[in-house]
Image (cartoon, rainbow, N blue to C red; front, side, top):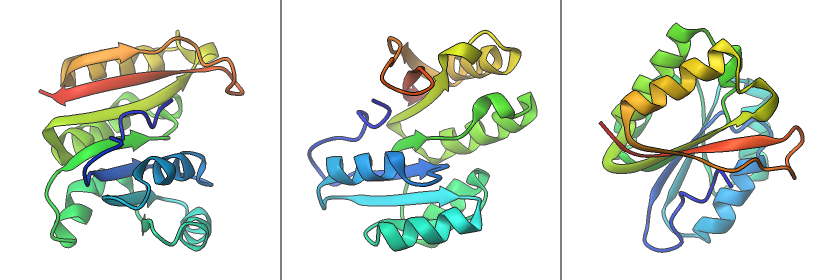
Length: 164
């Protein structure tokens, strides 16, 4: 569900944040079907190595996600069409959330899309409320999905479009 922002046509530039073991990575690769460019930014070295070995078509960057714009510039790329995040927002301070979201907005094209998820059981925590407030202030459109009950634990997805 978090990968639905990846277009099924064209040659999009997709940046994935916090891919971990690659659950979203595989789904993004299926949607891209050999088109476009997929860059995955993972801070944990072990996960980055594993992801690179498992998904050779993905450009895996072992680094902090706040450097998105720099990774794109180093590769001679412009802004991303889509950013898909698997980052654990509820574990971050408000300042860390703000830094990461600022990096996302800086890296997205004006018509770009950003998707991320949150666990339903944590949606009323302070960190989750801060995240939603930040998303609503940084994007022209924020749509919250219905609960994805098939996910364990159940989750919801934030679909954000057009950074402001």
